[in-house]
Image (cartoon, rainbow, N blue to C red; front, side, top):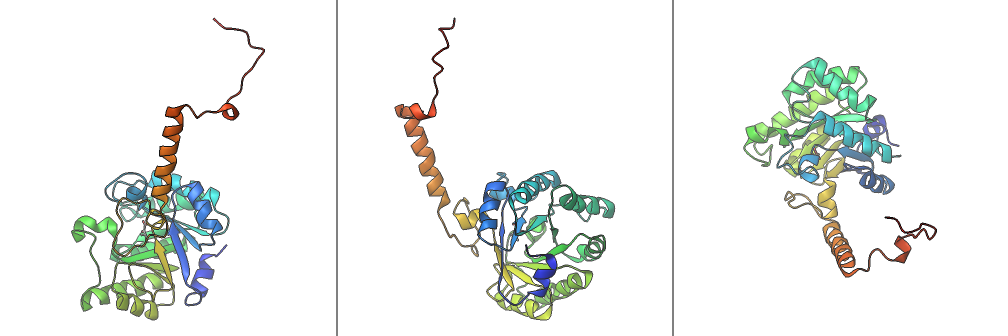
Length: 270
Ligand code: KIV
């Protein structure tokens, strides 16, 4: 299993592969495929919990889904994504919430949507033994402040701010950095400027690794962002299976003899 130290040391060698997962069966598929990192993303809000955004996702939901993923994972590094307002409001509460992901859900690290407010917290968590993956660029928990899910770092000043925050989080002890929806040349420059690995989503080919949301990759999402890519059509397979089941029940083909058992010594009951 790659450790956070392996990820740090191997930055720039073989690209790091990261995917989200939210439950045991899909985590097992991702893990057996040799993906390096499984992120139990707060994207579960849209991907599997039926919300319109990630904002309603709770610490308890991330903890429970992280525990399911960790139980099914042997090799990948499991990272729990801290949901909206679970960190940053109060330091002791932030540590407690992050600590629960390692102590009770068996995560290996946490991810924080990052900004000026997470620099000191990253330092503190790291000192407490909780490895932190930082996240800059588009941070979807700020959707109301940003006015949507638009590209970030698109002016020189904004790109410089991302670079400055990347350096500050590296200095604070973050072991890696997710860069979301930023120009490829900005992501390339940030990757060049810091020593910890960058993992891009909508950030071009020059980061140290790539991450996508599993339901987008599977072809199960109702909607996916423009920078995502679909590598399968699981929705079509699921629809076909459900149709086949309904037809089999309605036609009386299911259950067949092999799905039923008869106890012949039971007399008629009244
Ligand atoms: O929640 C999530 O899945 C994420 C990734 C898109 C990086 O934060």
